[in-house]
Length: 114
Length: 111
Image 1 (cartoon, each protein chain N blue to C red):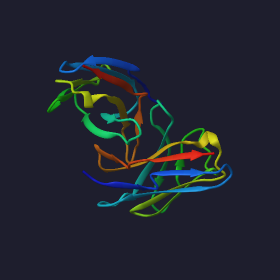
Image 2: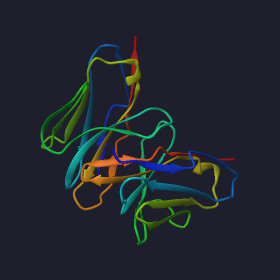
Image 3: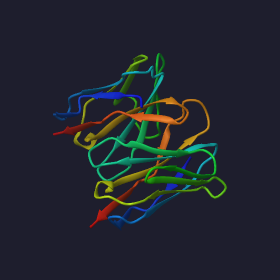
């Protein structure tokens, strides 16, 4: 299957700082990337959809000024958590698809805000 | 919106068969997916159904009834390594639509 990478895999930051998470499609061009968040023992919640060369679409309740998404190329999408707070600590996963029924996930980024 | 329901937890014995059910309500259905997720890891794709019926892949099978808004994942010959969360997800019709996930079913396989 297709490969999606994420960096970093784990990050610990102090409250009030910003953290950037990179998501790359390694062997296909991802015109669309989905960003999910997962709290412990809960399911994946869609945060936003990023499209290459245009603004991201955010789900209801997700602050677009806090979670900045950039999709500047067909292989890279980034999520920046600005002014992070402990409640932003979560598992962030990006995902893209190569066909109508083939969606692949990155390995995820564990963010801990202290 | 979509409403996806699946049991929170299940326990089954090694070597047995377990069926994990999923019901959904959505407008513009375009496929139902099952993913496996181990703790601390990203989901891995198991199967998808877009037409009614049973899809079999080795020890895993998935069934879909679109008229009933119902799917199940069947795991045969359970192994300890099958202990994980199993996520049911639905895709709506349209271009570039994301998967919407249910809350997941945590399966514990015991000896």
